[in-house]
Length: 506
Image (cartoon, rainbow, N blue to C red; front, side, top):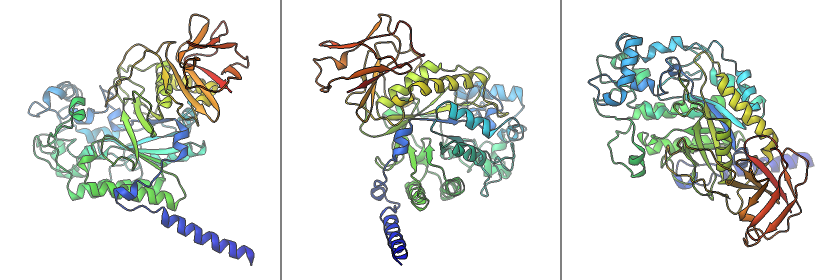
């Protein structure tokens, strides 16, 4: 009898808690959603731009847009080389359009088990595919559109297979979404292309007038809040945008839904409806979920802010995300990539984590489903570093200051630029409980490390240091705290590669 009574009480409490945590499609209500601790602990995730645009492997993932910029297109100057490449390689746009790449996107060597194994070895704690890029092709088994990976191209449920394997390895599964860009992505006004053919309207999007939509906004325009005209999607487009998201949520239960920008194309009511639906779905499934946004697409405090190919110049008092590609040139596989080094990515990750952020790294699979060997090598190198030094990354929180050193970060959309790597003067801090980690981004040549921030004249550190370890070795290091900094004697040779972590115990 007592057991039945306790079960009854538990049911009442559970129902009450669920009601208290239900979210209305209202910004004020949505602000009650808290960023889950799993996200703050995870720090590092992987996703991939992979779809029919991977077939031409030319220039970048915007191929599907730029290939249509014929001489009478307002954007011809920007897209000329894509148009010329496409028509010379595949033929006129009324004979070979974007839809014709779909049968060529066979993914015959795709193996979700191998991908998930690689993500795990790389040290990722969350991972997943681009569920739909701006091209309108869904990478899941959809009942809402015939243009999906289960029905065409690979003829496999890409998202379903990856979700299963990623979760098997105790990683969180994520879905990323770009569909809002479809409104104007293809020149549906241009009768000389297949994009204007009514029989393909369910792929290429709504009919627009010539010049209605122009891509892209420049970084300067975004920063200055450009008033350049963008039409808001019609009711049908809004409804389809939301319906597809609900299908992804219902069928795959993603732990995180990431959005590209340009959601101002979507009516505000639908954006709020998405968040309330997703957050309530999480409550119903006892699942802590995360949604991300760029710029002002969601109201501050309702989801996690994401910055693209960028990072913060200073530590923030809120958790944030950055998404960046492993290739300097593109987000999808191309014939002449310029991959970042593992060292560059590790330094980037350390800097982001020290400022209360997480990194979502994009990789570039080939159309056949293979992940390029150079990409695999870099991921495994990152994973090796995290195996040795991950305790200074996973589950950590920012310290009083993010770090020291001459390296400067310029904030702003797409602000990450190719420049020299960090030096031994650049040090970043993280903490976990009572432990402080100082991460030096290169090995000093002098035989000692000097951390200026931890000198006696700096009042940030009031505790007495008990011992200092260099992760990767059990050897205790000799140190002395002077006015100008904490001086740490180093082993004669570097322990490991890339950034070096000092574990400071009090």
